[in-house]
Amino acid sequence: MLSEFKGNEGDLIEISHRGHKQWAIYIGVNEVVMLVKKGDQSPGWLESLSSSTGKVKLEKLAAVVGNHRCQVNNLLDNRRKACQPSVIVKKAREMVGRNLPYNVASYNSKHFATEIRYGEAESWLVKKTSLIASITGAIVALVTEGSVVAVGFAVVGALAVCKALIRRCSSR
Image 1 (cartoon, rainbow, N blue to C red):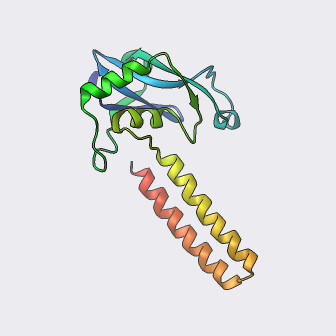
Image 2: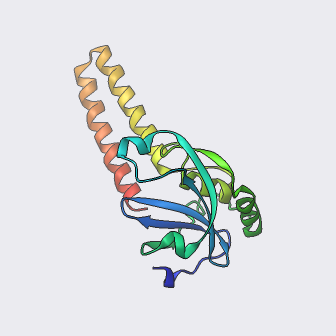
Image 3: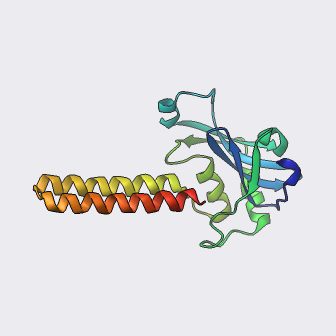
C-alpha cells in the first residue's frame, strides 16, 4: 500500500493493477512520471495489443496507485548501471507532455521507465515473445526437413526452455 512506500528520486515504481502492471519513475514529492496509453478505456484483449499513441504524464503517486499495491522495483540494477537520480528526474520531467508510440509488446510503460533510468528500454515480455518465436521457428524448420526424431527432441527441449522461462519470469 501507499502508506508503506519508501521510494527515492529516480526509482522505478511498479504498480500492480488488476490484470496488469503499470511502471512509473518516482521524481520526489510524491510525484511520478509515466507513459500512459492515450484513450485507454479498458479495451478488449486484442485491441490492447495493437500499436497506438501514449502520453507521458506527471501524476501524484496516490492518484496513480489508488487502492492498488506499489513497490520500488529497480529491476535491472544488478545488471545495468542506473543514471544518477538527478539525471533520471531531469530526463523524466523533460518527457512530460510528449506523445510517444505505445505498444504493449514493444514499447509500454515498463520500456519507458527502464529507458529513463538505465538509458535503454527493456521488458521481459519482449524477451519471452522473442524466445518463443525462435523456438517455434526452429521446430517449423525441422518439420519442413521431415525429421520426426529431430522434431520430437526439439519439442521436448522447447517445452523445457519455456517451463524454465516461465518459472524465472514468475519469480520477478
